[in-house]
Length: 149
Image (tube, rainbow, N blue to C red; front, side, top):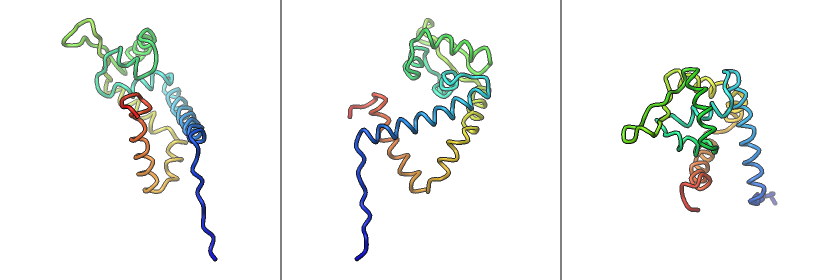
């Protein structure tokens, strides 16, 4: 008689803990890479959030902070030449944040220097990569509040 491997289905709590641990480790790797380029993790995250032009208020929502905090973040990005603000075409009171080419380059360097993240992903088979991507695409809209569960 051969033995059959049994798989225990993780509880919601176990999945939440694993997801939190992976998220925290990813964030630490991201923050370390950002700091090597003189950016806080919030500033680097803002660069990632403005791959297309984004209104300041929407950027605050994407970053999970108050609009007043975004002003300081964008001020720093502007001073470094990584992003700039422009008035919205329909309402000049609304300011749109636009990433610069230099900002895109720095963001690419940060992502490229996330060594632990690249090592972790490198341990996965193609099938695991496809499965992980599929799971992320499935749960992200619900986690971000863009769709009902």
